[in-house]
Amino acid sequence: MGAADTPSYAKHGPWRPSDILGSFADSTAEDVALAVDAAATARHQWAQLPAVARGTILENAADLVRDRADVIASDLTSEMGKPISQAKGEVLRSAAILRYYAGEALRPVGEMHPPTVARQRLYTLRRPVGIVGLITPWNFPIAIPTWKLAPALIHGNTVVLKLARESPRTGLHLAEALTDAGLPAGVLNVVTGSGSTTGGALVAHSEVRAISFTGSVPVGHLVREQATARGCRVQLELGGHNPLIVMPDADFDRAVEAAFVGAYLAAGQRCTATRRMYVHTDIYPRFRDALVARIDRAVVGDPHDARTEVGPLVSESAMNDVLAAIDRGREEGGRILAGGARVPSVAGHLVAPTLFEDVAEDAYLSCEEVFGPVASLYSFTDVDDALERANGVPFGLSAALFTRDLELGLRFAQEAQAGVIHINSETTGADIHVPFGGLKDSGWGPHEQGRSPVDFFTDVVTVYENA
Ligand code: NAP
Ligand code: MG
Image 1: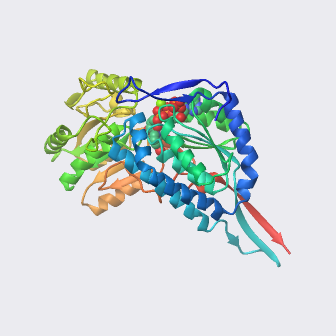
Image 2: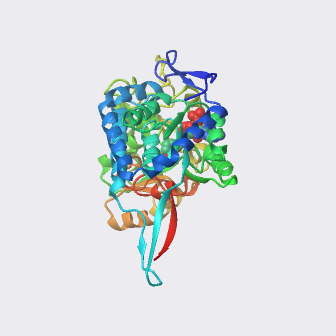
Image 3: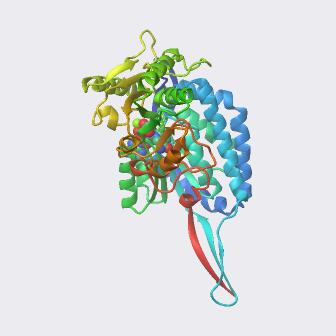
């Protein structure tokens, strides 16, 4: 959507950077205001529809996303470089999320309480918040817009969705599926464009009552500051620096594969990617050799090839940031065991899966999120020490432990400072029907997915109904 004189920008892909994939609106503050007006006009009718009717639209959209999965996945791969097999999985996940939230229409809302006086009904209702703003990153360009949109819509809100500049086409496929599924005009309004201008205008708009944001910690904290200053509700899902701890009694092969998958799939461009691997000294040399061997076997290259495991980084500047972080890791005393450079002789923004060791606890790589295929190995002898180091960052998104010791697993579930905890599985991956979100700097407000979003996308009111 956009006014007639809205400027546009050309979108290039990460694998053949000279190709232009499309031209998209660089939405202005006026466009955002038009989008909010449309959402305001549609608001009352949408809120008054029975939730089941809203659910039918989500269900139909789920079918359309599934039917169109090959086309959507191919566009997703072209615009942000996620290998096609992983892209297809993400698109099907989007369909599953739509279906799950369609089902929310049939689950109970509100609570009946015992009255304190005669001839009274005392109960709570959940009402839509109104117009909500959703701001999404490029790294899960359909799953994240879906897991914000589906609960926002089923709970009766109208929406302005700001898609990431690097992945507009994929998100527009989702909007098209919803429109084709029968979503009334004005209920969902999509804006593309720059973070500061388009996103900033949405955060600042006085009629937007809630902002759900996924992205990096610094931008998220800025959005929180701006939105809360005007009394707007905020939910944040932000970056991570996710640890994996491997005990000597672990299933060794499973742990090595989990380290590889967690660190390098989607070229490490996942908020839950494994960044730090703490491996017990008894198995450290063997683990290091096995992981390096797994990295050597990795299929790295063209993201459109169905066999590819690790594809390019989303943009030239993202690649340059990752290469600069690798240089810094080396300068600060880290030793490279695998990768460490751009893959030569391809035009795409391809960085080889990179593994470090001997990285100091206070080095950049140990402390800051590097959003690419870069991870560091550390050894430990005492599990208390491993836990303390794993927890010793301001992030708190996901954490994994490999062990056969049930007692230790229970302790980890209590003490790991992360919103998503994996015992004997990689740090990445999340089921759609359970809450997902970070602690500490990694999150703010109710978690997403599962039944948590009802707390964000509705207002609770208490009704004293006296006969
Ligand atoms: P980002 O740079 O923080 O951007 C996220 C979104 O915010 C984009 O749509 C961006 O627009 C927009 N934006 C930028 N500046 C803004 C501003 N001043 N006001 C309002 N909106 C603004 O993050 P990213 O680079 O897209 O994504 C990678 C980051 O997301 C990583 O840190 C990753 O860990 C995190 N992430 C977290 C989760 C989670 O669930 N916890 C999931 C996925 C990713 P532009 O696209 O135009 O810049
Ligand atoms: Mg960014």
